[in-house]
Picture 1: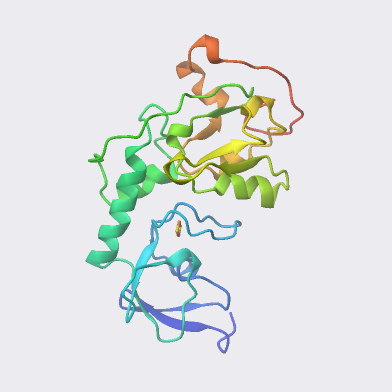
Picture 2: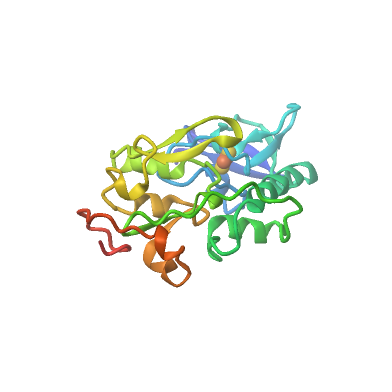
Length: 235
Ligand code: FES
């Protein structure tokens, strides 16, 4: 980074430099600082929808999502203050409350951030759990674990340019859908696995991983074979 280009700002009392175009979160990551984040991941555009990455910015009343906020020279940012941490924890706890234990991957990003911030036992009841869907031969869908971060959608649309996954309905009923809300196995998904890679909770997983705990046989419908080079699902 060119010295004249860098944007120097303060993060939790430490001076760090951001490159032009970088967000607070990206600069923090490069400097080795941990700010929880779920809907943001390297290689996908920031969407700012999960709010796990909120930080305090001096002079601003409202917490800001660090994944889609550009730092300014001299800005003072607090990611580890009591207020910022309390908000980050609350977001993680609410998201975690919905994820059934049998679906959540122990090594998921959600599990990682919950552990890192000491979110152990959610105090909230889960919402009604959608039925697991096993229509796709290579990818298991558990929308109960979906936090609508849209990483799968962006990976499908922006990385693979397939555009199979979208968001449907509104408010608390919002969910990801495949094509025009058909079972994933009946959609135009080619089983590339990009969405599985992007998912931070385990809502989309390689079906092979879940074989032992698969849904009842009646709902397992490997209806057709699709072309894929995916190294994970082996279709
Ligand atoms: Fe910033 Fe989700 S990671 S809002």
